[in-house]
Every structure is written in structure tokens, then in C-alpha cells.
Length: 287
Ligand code: KIV
Image 1: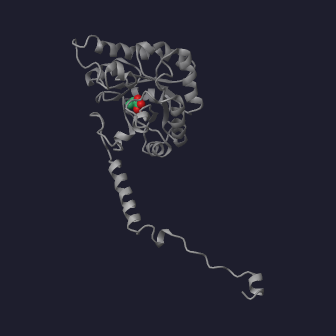
Image 2 (image 1 turned 180 degrees about the horizontal axis):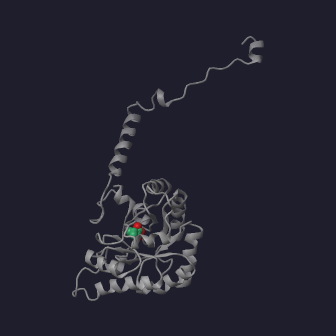
């Protein structure tokens, strides 16, 4: 595995070289280090932490302070991967000036190398302003989880031609707007694979798919879905490559059983008293 540091221009080159980009979310040091060692190209400190780490139903409660806290842990694990931090709900939608200030905090305090924000045409000016101060911006269009209430749930976008008026065209226009505003890559989430293929062909920046089929320039999944660390079912588009929930539960049940059965700790996991070594005073006192 090549250990060369992944950079923003490096990801751009991956598209022209037709080398698939591999990404996963990360929220803490150990899993970030494991992902880095596994050769993942970029680690996203996603606001999905609100759901898979904090146990909320949506990503909306996540704060800037929380993303910064997690981003610092992930950044400490970085050796090769690029670190991208998500801009949480409310940190960039209110006005482009606030967005620049908060993006800078993710770089300065969170030690991220790029930021990601959700939205297409409506966020074009914001992307432009952040990119203008040399903070690399990744776009995110299609199923944007921060718009859960507008969408009426985490629903696939742009699926029907004609009958969902303009939805498909809107996703296409969002993709172009994000590229023209200066984003260096764009996440395509929850859109039909033919639409993702069309966007990938149209754009010069890399597309990173999640639930967007095989034609994207790269793929991203939530770490907990990849590793089987969720109690509930993962989304249809996610593939489980391990079952850590079951493994961890089994390990903890074994531990509990051994403590209750008094077989842990054994002598092997215990300390012996040291024999006292005679000192000159104790010898003189005849002890
Ligand atoms: O927050 C997140 O994990 C994301 C990915 C699903 C792309 O935005």
C-alpha cells in the first residue's frame, strides 16, 4: 500500500486517472487509525455522528463544538488519509459570513483539511465564499439528511422522471452549481444510479457516491454500517463487512459470565506481593 499523503489535488487527479476514491466516516482515534492503516483515502467526520454515536434520530442536533471535538480525535490518527469535517446544521445556512467563520474553525480547531456542506444551487454563494479563502469545500447533494423535514424522511431523491416535477433536473442543476461555485468534490447521496452516472460524466470534479450506484468516482459509507456496529438495520445501499455489534456483545457477555462465575480474574491476571528485602537496619535490629 502506497503511503503517500492524500491531498485535495490528489483526489482531483484520481478522477482523471480513473482511480476509485475510497472514503468512510470516522469519529474517534482508534477507528480513524484503523481506517487510515486500511488505506482509506479520506475520512469524513460526518454529522452522522449525531445518529450513530449520539443515538439521535437525525443529524440536526449536532453542534460545531461536537464536530470540532470529534475532528481533533480523528486528525490525531491521521497518517495518510485526508480529513474532511462536516459543517453541522445551522453553522452555514444562515449567512455566508458565518459559514466562512465556522469553516475556518473546523480547519483551525478541528485540524481538518477540508469541509463538507449540504445543498446545491442555494449554497453556491456560500461554497464560493469558503473556497475563496482557500478552504477546500466538498459539496453534498441529492438526499441531504439536514433537509429531512422538507423531504419528509430520508428518501431517495430524483427517482421519478416527470411525475416528481423537476426533482431530477434539480439534482442535476445542483451538481453543476456546486462545481461552478468551486467545490473540489461532491457527495451524491440517495439518487438513482443512472442519474449519478450522468452527473459523474458531466462534472470535472470527483463524485463520491453513497446510495448512488457504481458509476461514481468514489464511494463513501458510514463506518458503523461497514463494520456492523449498529443495533438496527443498516440502509439498503450499505454493505456490512463485519459484525462488530455481535462480536462486542459476545465479548462482554463472556466477561460478565466469568466475573459472575469467579473465573476472572485468575492468577494470570493478578499481582503477587513482593517478598520484603532485608535492609541494614532490619538486620541490625535482628528482624
Ligand atoms: O454525515 C455523514 O456521514 C455524511 C455521509 C453519509 C456522506 O454526510
